[in-house]
Length: 296
Image (cartoon, rainbow, N blue to C red; front, side, top):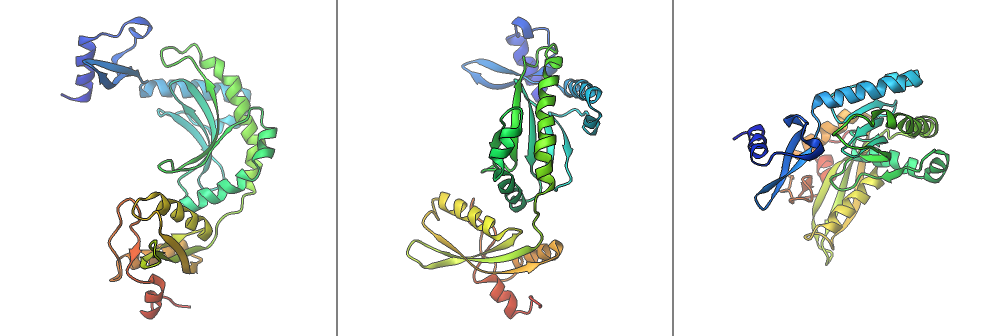
């Protein structure tokens, strides 16, 4: 039985009653079963999203032509990318709120953290100038995007009467980002050199357990990330990591190619599940230098 058929099966046995009864079946899916009864969750289809974004963005553009850069689509988000890699202004539609965010994503962990820390240093000043204080949410764990955002509540998927109610408050929030945060984004320093690093790993009694190597745009930031990850893993919580050496590449493609060659070399060590897949039996840069893989 396919997913849609499963939904129809449950709908036939337990019809939805109340204000949602008139909604088409495509708006529903079932998330879990309590006892023998499914728990329905209301989700709009792509047509709903497209109609919502078309309405919202046309209203915003009527008020200010700047919003013409946002385009309607059939997904949960509509965004505009700034001139900085990975930084965009986004509207995010969820079941009970519409959110306006400044999002940093899809540009590598190092750059995300580097940009975020620069903006975070200005948080007090930024918050004081915005019409509504946003929530600052850094990338953490499985969440790979950092966001600054404010939510505007709405009445839910079951009606469209609230669409006009969110226009003014969401515009006020996004206008604040545009006038207060965008100049700070334009002034952000960027990472230029890409480094291949060699990190020595030692266990709790100081015995060398192996080496780790990889590429990064931000050595200090990457060391902090590795330390957090190793300290949280049961097999390495008491290990110590030491950055022994690194070499810079002005061209990132060359750094990526060097990393690929190192990961295919004879000194590659087995992965440690949920910890690292870039392990080596000895100092990878020392080995590469001995084998004439590094040139001045």
